[in-house]
Image (cartoon, rainbow, N blue to C red):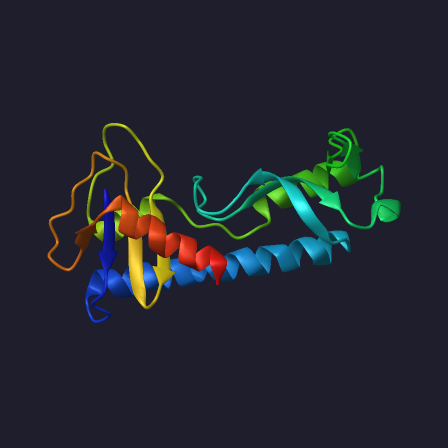
Length: 169
């Protein structure tokens, strides 16, 4: 089901807004932390993008670094023709792997369910929360129906239209 929340004064809006704002900050800070740790920049990576995972922020397992001549083989090994991943056979590679797994900031998918005060039984779908045009948009899968009058059910077409505008902006 697709939903939106427009009332900025309601508690659910405030909590979801705070959560998503924190997650977006984590995304930026994690990219900065990767640059500080590696000294390298990247455009592509191996991992899970965005909030569609347990941590609700992008997870990184490997990179297609822009500075290919600066890639240290004690830290990195080839995954494919462009991507390198931490070389876990070396101490430096193990440290990098640990940094990518445990050193970056994370959120938790359960936080959304706690804020909405709902159980996530049945067929599981990662909750999707986005702020757009000062409203909060949610996708919670097909099995969850919300009864809070502040949370307005919308059509998939409206949701998709708003999300496409976000990517065009």
